[in-house]
Each structure stands twice: as C-alpha cells, then as structure tokens.
Figure 1 (spheres, rainbow, N blue to C red):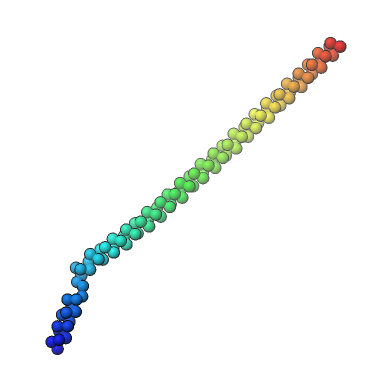
Figure 2 (tube, rainbow, N blue to C red; figure 1 turned 135 degrees about the horizontal axis):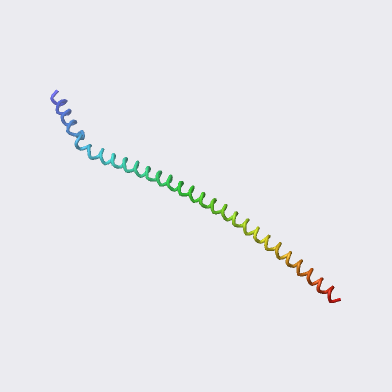
Length: 104
C-alpha cells in the first residue's frame, strides 16, 4: 500500500503543473491570434485591391467614351471642311469656265 501511495505522489510530481503549461498555451494562443490577424489583413488587402481595380476600370471606360465622343466630333469637322472645300472647288471651276467663255 505504501508503494502505491509513493507511486501516486511521484506521478503527481512528474505531471506538468498548470503554471508550467500556462506560458506554452499563451505562446500558442499568440501564434493563433497572429495568424488570424495576418489572414484578416490579407483579406482586407484583397478587397482593397478589388475596389481599386473597379475604380480603374470605370475610369478607363469613361475615358474610352470621351475619346469616342471626341473622335465623332473630329470626324464631323473633317466632313464639314471637306464639303466646304468641294464647294469652293466647284465655284472656282464655274468661275474659270465663265472667264474662259467670256474670253472666247
């Protein structure tokens, strides 16, 4: 009987105490918390990057639309100038014909 009591006491002494395990649990707890914070930061950065990409896409689309409008305006101006030039050429031809008929 006495040996069993001494064995129990020795087992109790061999078993780690709560005070010994507390820093280990804190260390693992800190690691788990840090890992969670890192994952949260990565998630936040991904969301921020998506928002930036959306804004850039909108900006590019807006610029593309503006360029399209400006190109249409320039095309209209070019057509208008070409029409005016044709009319001037017609008038010059008509005047030269009149002048040549008058000389004959």
